[in-house]
Length: 131
Image 1: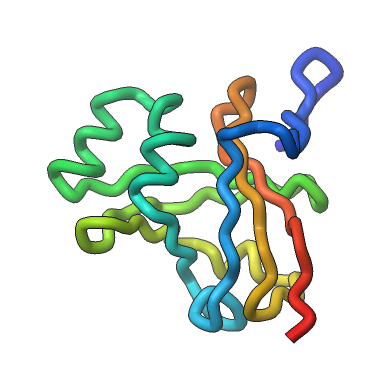
Image 2: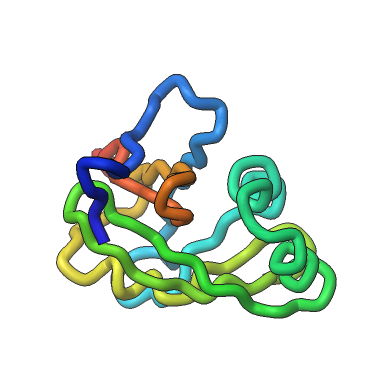
């Protein structure tokens, strides 16, 4: 759901230290169902906003959590299942719903940032690949 006048969508702030930049790999475009983010990036920039029981379950007990991901350009929100993948990464399952209608290429950079009013992860394409 897009923001309202009272609670507008949190815009991308290029000066924020909490931005998460992901350069897309071949496995994260096309027919991919997942995008991978490192534990360090999520701990520093996202988990601090989540209930501690959800974070503990995700990290220590391999439980999944649901997270809304908002495409800032199209104003479309999709819900992703977040699961731990090994010791250092987390996979966002449901990425294929974001890819529908997008024409991402390997090497494109996506930026994610937390929206504290809407309790979701916003994203937009930050840089296009010329490969």
